Amino acid sequence: MTSAQDTRAGTTLPPGTEGDRPAQGARKQSWRDGVRRGDWRPALLFLSPWVVGFTVFTAWPVIYTGYLSLTDYDVLTAPSFVGLENYQRLVQDQDALRAMNNTMVYTVLQVPLYVVFSLMLALLLNQVVGRTAGIFRTVFFLPSMTPPVATGVLLLLLFNGQDGLLNEVLAWFGINGPNWTTDPFWIKPGLVLMSLLSVGGSVIILFAALRGVPQDLYDAAFVDGAGFWRRTWHVTIPMISGALFFVVVVNTIAALQSFTEAYTAFFGVGNTTYSNEAAELYAIHVFRQAFEFLHMGYASALAWLLFLVIMVITAVQVVVSRRLVFYEGGAR
Image (cartoon, rainbow, N blue to C red; front, side):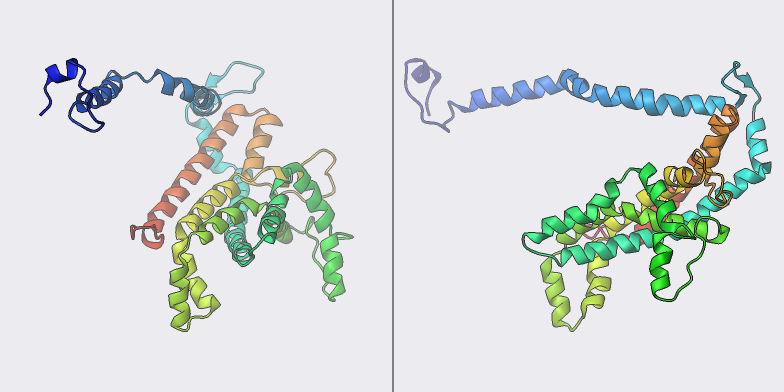
């Protein structure tokens, strides 16, 4: 065994011997001591932009909106406390109830169609291999980059009941297209169809999940005689159920908050020729109460109701997902 005196005398020790171990242990201990001292200043420095942004633009507005929901506030005068009066008014407001009903119908129609359409495109994209795969991914994603305001204007051009492009195409097949922008029954289906322009993000998410499905599972199913649809139902969907669940939750929240396209098409400047009661989604009703009628206190109560509805629906989806969603490793 090498003594400390031999080391001091200049004896050279090969790497990995006991003579090196105290130094290595000292370095590790020094790192641990730094952690124990709680020197989190570098981490806080990098986190501070997000913390400041979240506090200023999310946390504080939510708290202040909760306060305003208990007041009568018209921007021009100071808020006056009225307690739960705004919430009592909300329950009796037929316009608010109609807007909530419009939003629920839109969400029920839009979410399943959006998810199924995204999955179909992702499955098609997954079949493309080689250099053209990147081109197709770009083509599928580009429509989702269209600004929402432009999508609202495009809705009027494509779905105009008189000379819209969609009805012109239907006429080629002998189908008399409906009045998408004036018939209350067809307004929400038109909005749902226009929302499909934004499936690009969901398609890419599902495509990435599809690329992670082991090929061995497909080979085993093929040997057992399973066709494409059986492999999709029994192999693909269970294996990407986590990504599907994410797409469902995110799109449900987006549908409940849908605003820009419908507002641009039916409530924008100069839009006086289109029926808009069926197109008044809940977020539009909140916006109009706040910025057209200056009922800031009441609009805050409306916004809090939407927040609670989203929280409840999301919680239900999470509970249901525990029995339906498969995660890698077998956990559910």
